[in-house]
Amino acid sequence: MKGFVLGGVSSGVGKTVATLSIIQALENAGHAVQPAKAGPDFIDPSHHEAIAGRPSRTLDLWLEGADGLRRNYQRGEGDICVVEGVMGLYDGDGSSTAMVAEALDLPVVLVVDAKAGMESVAATALGFREYADAIGRDIDVAGVVAQRAHGGRHEQGIRDALPDSLEYFGRIPPSSDLEIPDRHLGLEMGDEAALPREALADAAESLRADRLAAVASEPPAPETGESETAAPVDATIAVASDAAFCFRYPATIERFRERADLVTFSPVAGDRVPDCDAVYLPGGYPELHAADLEAAGTLADLGDRAAEGLPVLGECGGLMAMTQSLTTAEGETSTMAGILPADVTMCDRYQALDHVELEATAGTLTAAAGETIRGHEFHYSSADVDSDARFAFETVRGDGIDGDHDGLTEYDALGTYVHVHPESGAFDRFLERVDR
Image (cartoon, rainbow, N blue to C red; front, side):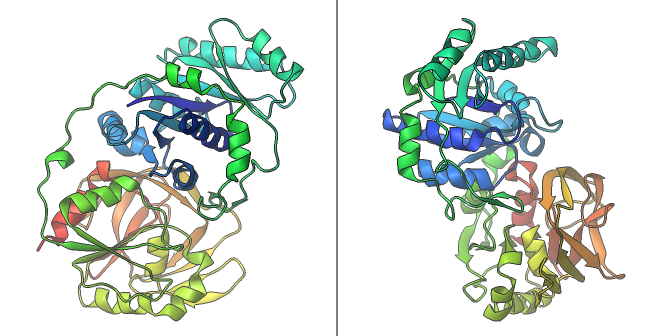
């Protein structure tokens, strides 16, 4: 599968809208598009899936390593992959867009805000191309997409200013319909605020799908990882899946299905905890559904099952749901599952945002003692932990739960603020731990 990386000159330049417009343009040209996201985000990929009709792949060097990143890319479907970058092209020490492009040996299409410039768009793009040589990175900035550019004289001025080394791939016209509402943690999810198809179709007409397809290249083949040859386990995993628990990587669900039986349930809807050998609570927005979660009774049921020894793994929003209570930013408190000895409160600004590395101080659901796992944290909540709480990890990098530790553990349950990718090996340890 050939592909290219869509990099931005900065955060907020309109990469997601450009990505969706390009997906639409390529689909209109007859291509089967596999979307992907550089970085650990869950929200932008939900918009990709709403337009492309297939899950977006997560490509993050810190979470997956170079071969893991290539394996995850290779598992995609379609004939061309559009990889949306994170922040500005060169921003981020753990896994920048440039680092992902270099690891995959894919060309970069640069998104430049052209709202108030013409020749400056070309100067900016040329600077981004030459900066790669200056810092010794093997990155090919192939050309530009002009975001918020008008047609006519504006567009022609940009095209005329570009040097021969940079190709013009088209423009995204300024339009109020091409704006995605946001909230804490980022944009609203794709199934909540999908862009109008008509607006995307109009934007797609201003893009050169043939040239975008022609610039795409194929990454090097990955090595086979241990997880690719891992044997199935005799276990059923129940995964919470609804508006409160919607942050999960497609590769995680794939890994569960490859090695075990998987069932889903909705705590918001009041589904009873299925007959299973373990439960996975992914992240999401439990704070937006706290009252419904309390009233539905599923979390109380889960608390009882955990006390009886059912293994439960929760990440970020899943951790929040496993605690004793959750207080929203408006000051409303709801009872949660009561598995973990902590109370969670939502805050007005984010409390942690970083790539994370954890070292297990003892054997736990996702790591053996002394093992390290890498992940990502981004949350607006803080946890007030009881004095007798036990932690499974020390934080080598990141904030964790209390600045020095992460992984609250009680019974055979584990809750962390950290999201991990299956290439970390954490979910394979989890499956092997609950194998009957």
